[in-house]
Image 1 (cartoon, helix red, strand yellow):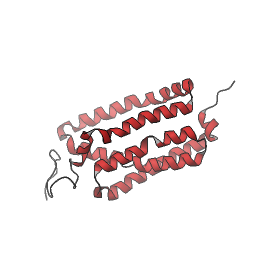
Image 2 (tube, one colour):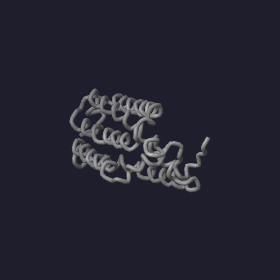
Image 3 (tube, rainbow, N blue to C red):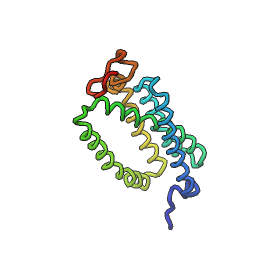
Image 4 (cartoon, rainbow, N blue to C red):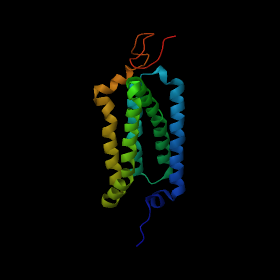
Length: 184
């Protein structure tokens, strides 16, 4: 008996999977551009926490409970918009908090760590899907993702991202320590 790929079984082919990924990518870029234009008006922590929550669990639930393209496309588009703000916020906080002389080491270690574990996700998800089924795997991974997205809400340390350089939490004209910026 021939085993069929989930994209073929559930989405009527790889074209729809490609369209989902493309829509997600376009919306991530759009979210980053919109955040770049208006993001300074909002507190970083609250934007980050909300975007992280929106970007985590919903696509896994949608994929587990539907086998049609439209609900997944809408979910991934909304998540893409939300995810677009995460990297700009994290990059800004990193550049404001990590001293200049350590920045290349910190950024290199972070990038290397991400690139080290990323390839493990596909085989792990494939093993789980083969062992317990696709829907169960999607819900389990979504549940783990939900736990991760709750961290900014549970742990107070995350709220410090508003203190690193956000205009909401510092005195007018002051600069964050270690920013290297000069007053005009």
